[in-house]
Image (cartoon, rainbow over all chains, first blue to last red; front, side, top):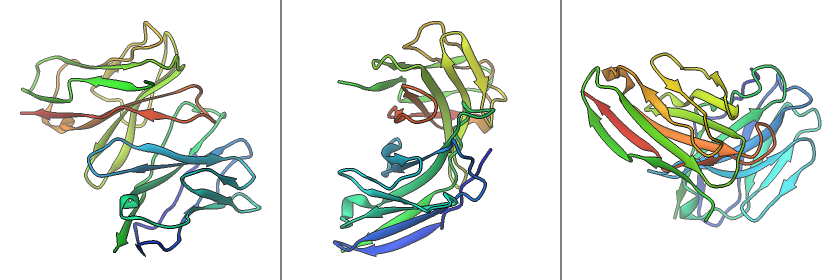
Length: 112
Length: 113
């Protein structure tokens, strides 16, 4: 299974942009890149996903490298409520496609 | 309201006593999955199902069983629970297995004594 690598932790100041990186050097052409986050004491929630092009939604932006071996989740103005663990995962149509492997994620701390 | 529900939310049991954690979704999703979450180990997939009567092992299936007799339900069965199955369990569903959003339930915290 294609794996992802993320930094263990990052810090940000409130109201500043945050760039959360994810490396996925073994990604295949049909793998979708998904981002989820998990707030304390809650289940994971969807943030954004993409295949090749950059994506924007009301929560965040996803910038995907041209070779697709890395991506970056961008929170444009971090708030205290954005403090969470952020997971970057790949979902594939290839063999074992039903598997959904979450890594350890990045713990984002937002300072007031 | 679109949601994934799990029951019970909290459970304390003893070693060897069979238990079932239910999971239900009201979004007509084909794909459903069970995860466990332990401190320092992140989310690990136990089993998944890509449709009714189609289930397969995830990364940590030992000691668990699942069934998918109806599209909306995906129960997790622990035939003989052991203390190492003490964990936080999440059920999730999505329309497909690749490009659609996974919706997670609120979690079931299990303690096996």
